[in-house]
Image 1 (tube, rainbow, N blue to C red):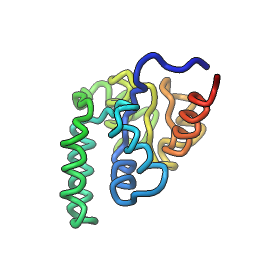
Image 2: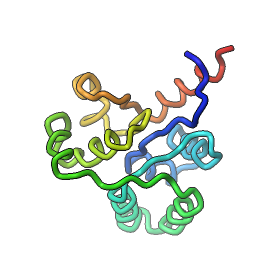
Image 3: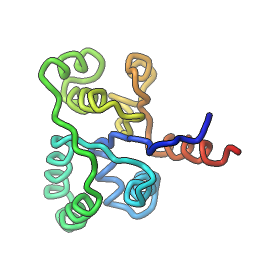
Length: 151
């Protein structure tokens, strides 16, 4: 595998944002650090940001300001929410409530969809049906490390 000549584009699921902001250690936090450093291009949809903000307000109100400041400073690539047609197509692959995430990631032409959702995304059946690479933060970091350790 050759080193990339462009930034790797990753669509970040809401659960990765929450885990990465909630803890300064761990794979999700390291992934967010790579995005913040400009090494990796974070891509999100408006729905991801709204869902994350709502979850922070409900479950971690003390972190709402930190999350909002992080997203403001990072200014990720924002993609349009998916069309109803693309969500219907995605709903044939993943649970209907997760279809907007899959559809937005597919429409964004990203290199990876990074999620912590083992039940709906990180399973062999879904991974086989999806054209893009769906991986966890730790799997991404392992691939990223291998890519840059190659000579």
